[in-house]
Amino acid sequence: MIYDSHIDTPSQLLRLRNVEIDNKHGHVDFPKLQRGGVDGAFFALYTPPQMAPDAATRYALEMLSATYDVAERNPDIAAITFSPKEAAKNRKDGIVSMFIGMENGSPIQENLSLLRTFYRLGVSYVTLTHNGDNSIADAASEGRKWNGLSPFGREVVAEMNKLGIMIDLSHASDKTFWDCIEVSKAPVIASHSCCRALCGHRRNLTDDMLKALGEKDGYVGINFYPAFLSDRFGADPAEAALLDEAEKTDQYWRLCPSDPERTEAWHNMQDRLLNIWRPGIKEVVDHIDHAVKFAGIDHVGLGSDFDGICVGPDGLEDISKIGAVCAEMRRRGYSEKDVEKVSGKNLMDAWQRVINCSELES
Ligand SMILES: [Zn+2]
Image (cartoon, rainbow, N blue to C red; front, top):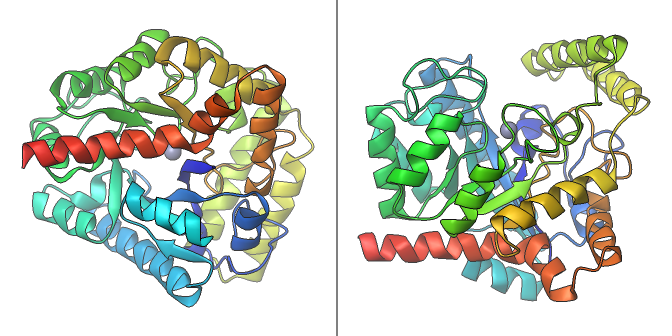
């Protein structure tokens, strides 16, 4: 059983990715999902923090529409999926479950009816912020606007509890995290985050945060992005400069994805990034070990961030290779039952608990 709590493939659909074929450049497509034995993944509707709210709403809807389009064109392969129960049925039928997440709550603007509408369209978690404070809460990379959750953010959390939408605290500031631990009546998640004790990035989770997620019956999906796995990644100045250039190349491509020159520039950049030092499967499982130690074996999973990161770890270049994480866990002595928990069962269970809480609330 493999479920990934965060991939950014909807952004790639708007960059004209054809997920029906095996792409040389690109982390996720149907052939890779099938080869990797992936039963389902959260397709994140990611909107950049610098986008104005109206533009963000429109962009999120365009991504959502593109995601529905590929599912509807491939009913024998994949389906938009609204609940863990539906996911279990899809798994029996050999269909990949496409869950919908929203990364950065800015498409909700300051309007709970938009939250409800996105929920009706399948959005099952909302990552409250990306790398910028928004109307809901402060982000890890800024953290200046509200000192945690905004007054509107508190309404959003209450409404998400009522509807059974998971509150995702990846990217949130530490204060936002603790506010949600206090305020949310349901378990909360971090769909794609690593451990700060092993890699000092400010958006990684401290041991206290991991412990709190476990105690609240929530979930953390370990992110595969090399910069969140190891402080060594990009520490060399030349490599840091290349990563900056990669960011610019990607942004330039996003503005005109049909331009073949921009597409090629991005693909060349991806090839160059494969040549710099990257952490590997060992580091991913080190983060899993650490998270299990503090959050508990029932609260840790995989949130690869594939298609949202410029490069994957050594040996985990795309989602078809995700099973290597399970193999390394077995090698370290995890039981088959525990491997299954981390590779997907914990995500489904946490989601179900959030739904169960909503039924009590409404
Ligand atoms: Zn992210």
